[in-house]
Image 1 (tube, rainbow, N blue to C red):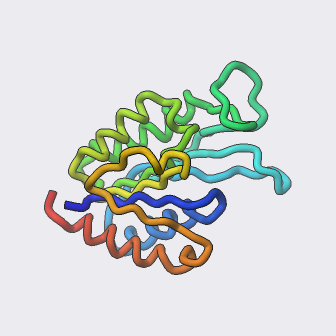
Image 2 (tube, helix red, strand yellow):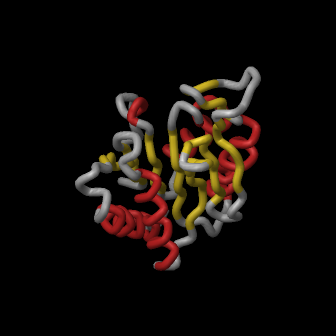
Length: 180
């Protein structure tokens, strides 16, 4: 039985924008959503990093920053802020999986930066094996790996990004209403 949606697409195509719209629609239909989203942070028009936002509490923390010096893991020009990511993003995922009232789980995204966290990898495996319905944005570099059999893969493109959130939200809503 399908329980999940995996959204992928080229960088900059709008995966996060689509998932934010899906969350808004689900909430407007009284679906309790947990997990986290990632947003780029810009200063004077220049991307300086990425933050994660807990969908339940609204807490924010850095996922990665361009201006960090030290021996943190790096992806391109960004240093991964593992402690903050685990404190906010990983905790948000844990809460979404374990809170009774959460009906739908969102993870934005599963990508190279996030994969530095062992706790995150373990919780994503738990999500994929579990009973709660979910939507995950997946970095293109990870698409070739084995995907859970209970998920539908959806590619976000420049052509479909302006209307696909409604379709995804309708599928997500149906998943959230199926008995677990």
